[in-house]
Image 1 (cartoon, rainbow, N blue to C red):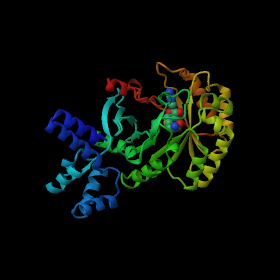
Image 2 (cartoon, rainbow, N blue to C red):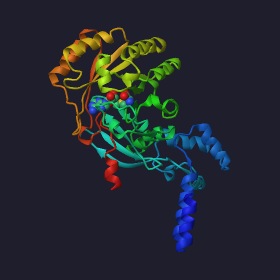
Image 3 (tube, protein in one colour):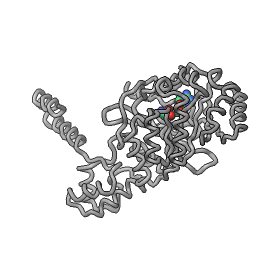
Image 4 (cartoon, rainbow, N blue to C red):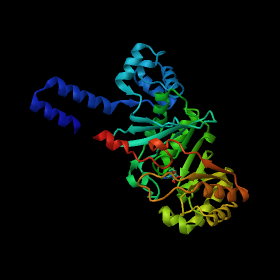
Length: 375
Ligand code: SAH
């Protein structure tokens, strides 16, 4: 179709060189073999197909996953002819960095342009007292879950990211910053468990190719019960975080429509069996919102609801933006909430707010930049 359009325009205008050049680019981009995301066997097959020796694949593999190369020209241990071939037949990524913002605290927010012209976001964070570098990545364009407090929900849902698009977020962050991502959290845009196959295949690539340990990967879900059972059956060894955000069904269904389908009690019992099957503790995420779910009674109810669930609790102070219908809790109510949970025997952490000045804080990803850029 694109070819036809170009060809027609060429016939009409007679501007041979420009139009042919355009056609060539369109065809080339469409056919190029995307390197990032391929495993060693796939890279070997590509090399053999193109009359190169098989061991060149291992060199490319190392550049991609261990050295985060910026471009094909920088793969300096490949002969020039192999680099030329790669430039002709392959490309590093199918997505690109469209914009980057850096917060006062060093947090970076990346806006990626996808091959169909849609956008996705990821955030890179370093916590002062730790050497870890954590990337928060997206699994969908927008999100279908409709949580009433979340900026991404306002975008609605466009589509799932494919495996390549999920992993290229980490590849591009590493190539851009020259830093190695040590921890990956699936807490960007979208509901990871609704993009199940691509979630699992991307984790496999992060573990095997990017050498990120299973325990350094966290998947956050709003609670899709059948998929949690599937993870249990697979003996999932990364961390599962559950966006609970309420101490009971009544409050949960007011702020999270998913609770109408998957009820609070059933979710807690699903999580209990999950911990038994996998032997892994889950993380209970709880966004504290003023007068919604932050009272002393709420803390006591939550402590009771999760008393027998093998879990740690991560309290998140609500990140307010100008359009938020909800408010931040007071410092005092956060401390009281934490104290009550700790007194019940839970290990509780309060999530540090990161990148608030660039809307990169938890739950703030809404691809606002895309409008700015499109104009
Ligand atoms: N769909 C998944 C992944 C999204 S992760 C999930 O629900 O877990 C993003 C996390 O940020 C979720 O825990 C989400 O509930 C939380 N969140 C959304 N908006 C927020 C806000 N304004 N302030 C703090 N946390 C928020």
